[in-house]
Length: 334
Length: 294
Ligand SMILES: Nc1ncnc2c1ncn2[C@@H]1O[C@H](COP(=O)(O)OP(=O)(O)OP(=O)(O)O)[C@@H](O)[C@H]1O
Ligand SMILES: [Mg+2]
Image (tube, rainbow over all chains, first blue to last red; front, side, top):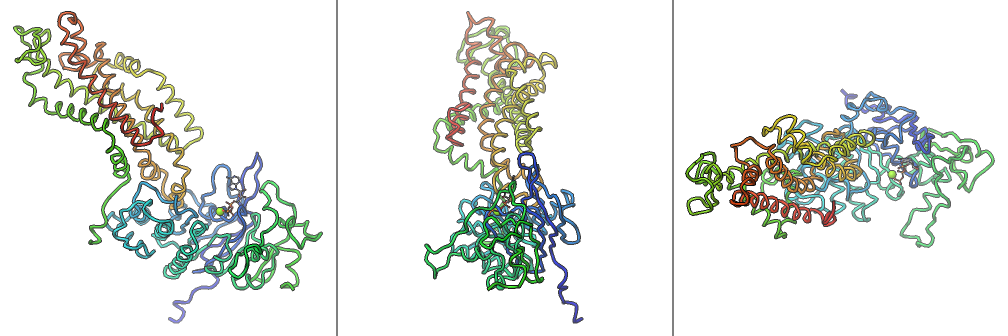
């Protein structure tokens, strides 16, 4: 009896193993996501951070089986979820998982709802589709969901159209739709980036609350480390399609090891700093067709050495791994 | 307000139509067009009640009578009352025109949305086929089909519908190509919705307004083509009254008894005029960018 409620610690809800997603650029396939691996524990929030173009969205879309065809495809790796490998699942089976067992919300609340369908209809639709609920039952459940995501006077607004809602309210509706079928995993791709700061905080709080209430796991994509501190348990930093550092959120903020992570942390705008002191990272993420042969960050790295001409492995103790020749030895930095 | 009452059914179509009607409201010519059209529809429906005579009943004594108190619009060569024939003829025009337009609307929109949504080679092939269909003038196409298959009501409808499919496919395809790139369609995919559901529930309501505009304009064309086919003798067989057929019959005696042709001609003109007013108004209501287009 005592063990009946014990959660198996070793069993991840989602396990991404060696995921490589490539795009065809002028005839050749290039990896936009390369050898990405991570486990997502039950009820855990993993933040995926990195600059624009580093492959965060593509990682999430790969999990969803939504890599844009025919330009892109998953070229290697496994995505284990509920006992099956999503990469090799057929279209029909994948469709039953999307929006049902794994959901995704996007950055643009203003355009992610169909303008000619009522908000209530769009929430109920997910339930009718995946749960085969009847019209009235789905509507009742949809109204409950709208109340759960704290749409004020949800009953009165059930038949309103998206344009009658503000950006923050629309993102709440998107969350209600994504969570309608109580998914195991929510992939949130910069869900608060398009919102102003106060609304952003509200939506983050709501996501955290619902994650707890539903017992789901979340992959939270953002390039904003301030948001990471507010919501994540663990952080994976991505650079140029690769994971370069993974650690628990406090560990990463206190003892960042990859030089890229350090630079990212220093570029967080803070109230106690003047805007003029805000650091930006020099240079750009290399394009997927022109990746350096060695460490992908080397061209922009202040710590660059000769050995960085060879690709570094992801190394370190299990709770904190880093992909850097200079920093992977000797533990922390001084 | 009770929760149950708050939740009602409201679908995309009603929204699309609602939007259309709202914009339509301010447009006087549309209302005049709609008024005239609905009046003609009503007259056609009430023909058995309103018609003073049996449209088929011949009356040798009253041949080729001019308009009078007894026969408002006069009589034809067989002494049949022209007003009664006009009222019944409206039914033929409306049934053939409306059915053909509806078929073309449904089939054409489905083809257009599918083609635009699937894209690639399938789209290319379908659109080339549509171009071939479009290259036949409506009347020529109708002529060929009726000449080969015979002039039954079904064949007339088929012939007219076939020529109207391509324009509906085109009008539905263009916005579909734009809409399928929208974030909310990507969101639908992320929800696992099937392609069929995405097309029927999420794209169709977005292109409904354009289809409706096209529908009213093509209704006018269908009625005109039916009248033209009847005029050249490829319409429904006599003695069934049809407006085009009546113009044809009157044509033989036009120099002495012009009213035989004039009244059905005016009827054809009036309904086409009304439907074009309606369609133009709807088009302006739907999208100012479409004004003066095509
Ligand atoms: N259709 C495509 N064709 C070719 N390359 C693509 C395509 N889509 C994405 N990529 C490549 O994949 C890389 C990763 O893109 P992704 O959208 O995952 O970045 P991201 O980290 O989500 O950035 P952002 O913060 O801007 O959303 C990009 O650098 C881009 O070069
Ligand atoms: Mg992205």
